[in-house]
Length: 397
Picture (cartoon, rainbow, N blue to C red):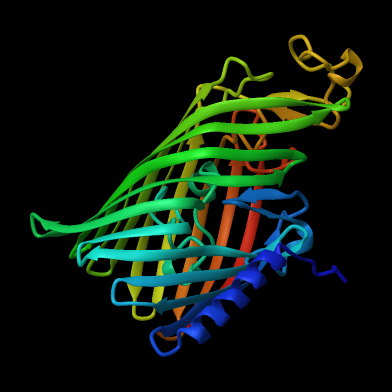
């Protein structure tokens, strides 16, 4: 039996206990609201190789837990202008379950139209960024891998400003944000994002909504241990995204296009060649409580990854301080790695059945085809194509 591991619980639980104490002390003034969401799922098919899906890693050992998510959201109105929100999130990941405070921020309503938030909060990078963990909010079992893996983070520690207004018979929301992402461990490297800032503009119409965002990340640093020292990849990158979800009678149309542009820091030991374009198009049809949908998604780049078998010397001279005998591929790998540059296409057919206004059952079949010698989102060569089958139940409460 796979051992269930809980990581990152300390800080989240301490914050949760502090919040309960604070709210208890202010019970006469604060109105506490509690809500949540959950997903439980099963994934089968060609799952022998770990692969990236958004900010997560799905492994063969997690076939009964890869899509399992439990979120608890607490909010309290401290005063008519000030409120606090905390979202605790437990997710199925490669090693077990990861528990963290996904959101933890204080809001100040400057006016009915404008709000300032400070703390750990969502970053406006994509159409479903705010509800990416809430499976009930979208038709798929999981967000399209191509677009939602390209953006490496969903929340930051920082601040944002939200302004709402009406124009041309459309409700608009403008969000500007700035923050940072603390160091995380991934694929044997330490990754940190010192500064991220940008804005998103959303338009809400009678048929759905449109989303446009532009984000710049400065001093994205990847530190990799090699031969007793560390080498670094340091760069800035810019994400621009355009997306929409629209519904006309019983037909649903959803699409996003995301572009990543990389600017390397000349002082870094290595350079990243991972400029990419990712996109998808979903066509859906509702009939009663059922929704049939089909999605085509792909990524493109002017660059391509190069395969290096284990023990093969890596290109160019080793960085200063790295002996030549260590400047070899430790395992079979691609450069740039699949975390930086993944080229693939996918075809997804799904069925969603709303059992109630709070519960949805989803069935999904997906084929992923790697492109241009890339392994796509997989950690090893998956061959010509990979077929995945998923069953998920999504709940909101």
